[in-house]
Every structure is written in C-alpha cells, then in structure tokens.
Image 1 (cartoon, one colour):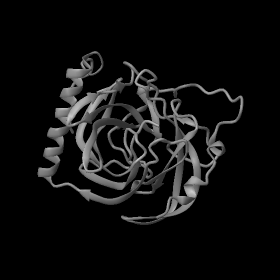
Image 2 (cartoon, helix red, strand yellow; image 1 turned 180 degrees about the vertical axis):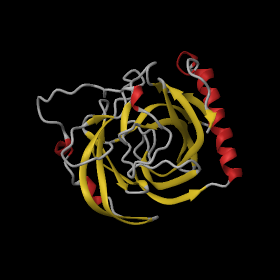
Image 3 (spheres, helix red, strand yellow; image 1 turned 90 degrees about the vertical axis):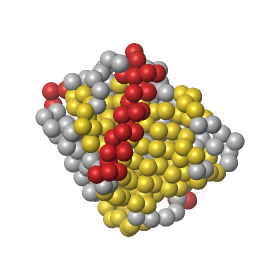
Length: 284
C-alpha cells in the first residue's frame, strides 16, 4: 500500500487475519473513485469528525518497525502535524498537514497532505506531495491533486459501521495512488504507548499494486489513528502505535508553517504541471 501517512500491544494476532476476509464480494462491480461535489463543503477546514479530528497545532508521534528492501527490520518513527495553513484544491479549502517518516533514525520521506471535511462529516483526501529521500537528497516526488492528475477519496466516513461498502481513499493510478479501505472490526480494545482505548474501530486497507496485502489502521474517538498492523503479502510489514499527542507552542507552529511552505515551494518547482496550477497555501 501507499503510505501517505503511516498515521500511522501485540501484533501477532494480526498475522492470523486472512486477507481474503476483507476482499470485496466476488463479481462485485467497483467504481475506481468516489463521487465528489465541491458544493457540499461549507466549513471544510474545521475537521471535527470524532474518528479523525485535525486541530491546527497538534503533533502526533508513532513508533514501531518496518522492513526494508533487503528484509531487515528497522525502527520506524512518524511525526504528523496539523498546520495552520489552508490550500484551495478543486474549489474546496483544505487543511494542510505535514508529516515526516524516519526509518532507522534517518528521514526517508516528508510530505504535505490535504484534507477537508464535508457538511455530512466525511473527511476527504484531496491530494499530497511527498518527497522521498536517499542519502539526504530528493529522489522521487510522486505528488497528485484532485482535479489535475487524480480524484479525491474518503479518508474517514462520517459514520463508519461494520458492513459498510469499501471506498476509495483517492485515485491517481499514474502516481500510483489506488488505496481503498473498509471497516474491518468495531468495539476493539487497544493498548498503546499513549494509553488504553476502548471501542476502537479498525479499517483494512489495500491497493491495486499489492492486492494480497492488508494494512490495518486502528482509530479511537477524539484521537484518531492509534495503531497500525498488517497481514498478507505486505512487503513493508509496518507495525506502529501512537506514543504522544502534543499541542505546539506558537513558536513551534511558526516553524512548522515555514517547513510546510518550503515543501510546497518544492512541489511547484518539481511538479509545476500539477502544483503550479493551484494557489499557494494561506495561514488560517
């Protein structure tokens, strides 16, 4: 799966979950992306869905492990920050979020990603610009934006329930970004480095590139993603849990804003045919 955010206890039980248990019904027709209407967003940057709240100035940190291309298990750390910047994409004002992905202590990826909440409470994903690093230098920038080289997807349904149909989390097959998700379990109890949570909801994610792999993301009310696991032929075997949630100071938030804008400038520089077509982010 693409991991735009590994945003992001014992994980042994996850390995026993059959990937087939979350496959869509045989013969079921699936559209590649969701219907999206920009008119259904009255206050899109106030993201208050209880399963995926995004309060500007919040920093969340996950830690765990992943497997590299040689099959070696490495420490993995993800730092995700909700900025006070917004950016209009496809006629919708989105909240800009910034995250950094460290593997074995080195920054491997940084990105800005854009979310917005519709009037019904659904959280939409309207694109992202990641920078992948090798030896401290940018070696890939697989970015996409709704309405330009991709189509918006659902990051969190308004009222997720077991039995709901699978949904697209965004559609940009040339990047590639083809992630899909569905509710896998509800009412789960989870222990993490940040605390113990009751009534957790679990989503199973997969994509077209790794059809036999599943990534499991655990969400707690009022917090968001608290744990990540996997099953099947997931090459990264990512396992993570939330260890901290902090409110940034004004000085820290100003530094975050500066870094997010620096990455946005790179997006325009390296992908002008995509990011050069939208206005720069604004503080709000």
